[in-house]
Amino acid sequence: MTPPTKTSTTQTSTAQTSRANAAAGTATTVLPRATIGLGGGDVAYVDHGDSMAPAALFLHGVLVNADLWRNVIWDVADLRRCIAPDLPGHGASPSPRGTGVADELTFNGLAATIDELCARLELEQVDVVANDTGGALAQVFAARYPQRIRTLTLTNCDVHDNFPPELFKPFVALAESGELGPMVAGMAADLGMARSEVGFAMGYAEPEELSDALLTSYLAPFVGDQGKGLERFLTSPTTEELVAVEPLLAELHAPTQVAWGTGDVFFEPAWAERLAEMIPGVQRVTLVPDAMLFWPDERAADLVPLLRGFWETHA
Image 1: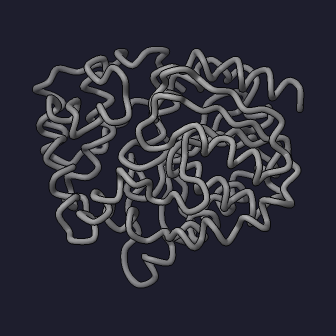
Image 2 (image 1 turned 45 degrees about the vertical axis):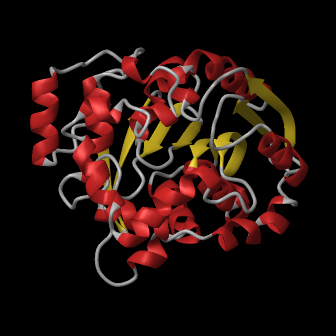
Image 3 (image 1 turned 180 degrees about the vertical axis):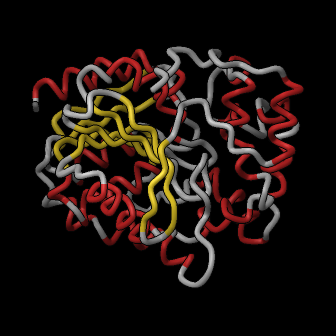
């Protein structure tokens, strides 16, 4: 397998090539993917590292995909077999179609999919690392399938009833009205807009450093259906599902750490403390100064030592 890139600028393409891929709706990802057929449909995933090592499972949030973790995976693959799925409708994983789609895209449905993925890959336990909506999914997964959790690392994400966060609610409203998908799909052909304040500048401190290849990986998958799968992904999970698992999280004693960027406009540091109050297994909360939502990508060098030290302690 080709090793992941250590920087966000490796495997760059010209703007012309990126726009051509986006216009074609090509799900051109940065890291290589494998694909597995599950009950709810195909799931694409990164699989990098020693196949005999303990497994780490990386869960991303909305608008991005498993390539978010490329810089982290590079520097932990000597310790872990790194599995990073593209959630439905993102990256190279298609959005479910047909009856029952809404159920499959709820937090409970997605958690069941992740459990099935672990079972099919024969991963008895995993070290879960999650960000953004992936962090909310990780909480539901850990609550519903605690036997799967070796350790849990949560970065900036939805907590309790802060789903969606206040600043993101207008985007969910646009998704409900069918207006968000075409807007996001349009950014795939306008990478300048994708880097702007209406795009990834909301989650990255230095969006101008994002390569065309990475932005194409993030955005091109939304072109084919004009973001309809993305809209279903945003509107199917509910606040009630996240709140409902809190009693189960109160019984979760798997070693857990919280690492939180303090510059995030969506999830302020108080939510990190809320997680520490909710989950008895939390052993430490680390604040990462000025880091924004997608800091696990942008500041992977801050996350890697936290993971390595935590995993070595709880081998």
